[in-house]
Length: 99
Image (cartoon, rainbow, N blue to C red; front, side):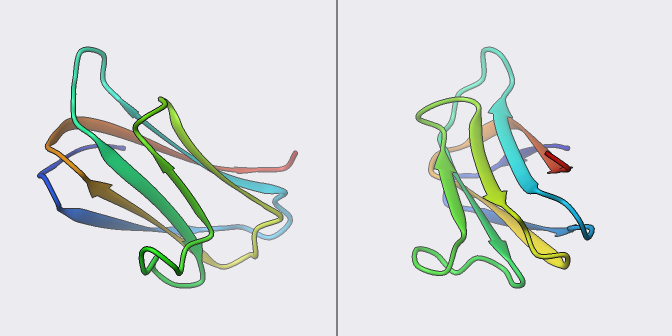
């Protein structure tokens, strides 16, 4: 999915995590030539409550920004993106992996 974010905005996405997966991986990248800083938070079971109630964090200082949760619980996971500055084009990819 691709989205744009305004400075200081937060967007939360709900993800279904199937049983038997070994890793939940969320990858965020900006389109080539685009600017803007963001933070990525992932939490299982309920939406992230920053800064303390998160299972994984990453930010735009190194791209792609990647959050991985090993042996995720089969349930809901929540991905929150927080824009530190305006982000015109942000791509998110969520993978539930068997390895």
